[in-house]
Length: 101
Image (tube, rainbow, N blue to C red; front, side):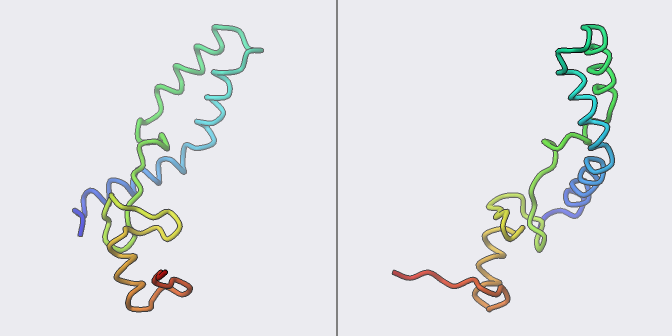
């Protein structure tokens, strides 16, 4: 089980990303827009830098919903390899079958 503080910090980051997503996208588009003047582009970059750092999508860490483990994460199931194997072995994940060849 991961530290509760690490899981909560990541949840806080996810909320900030959702809160600032539209504003961040608009400022990024303005900063890259070649039709705007250099000063307007620079102003957009300055406003973008004043937003909280944790509102950036790249700062969110994929974590297992069951244990909070940050590594060995499967996006399709939103859980780590350890939890996935355990739940699949017990038959709690419908459609997941152990492979054999």
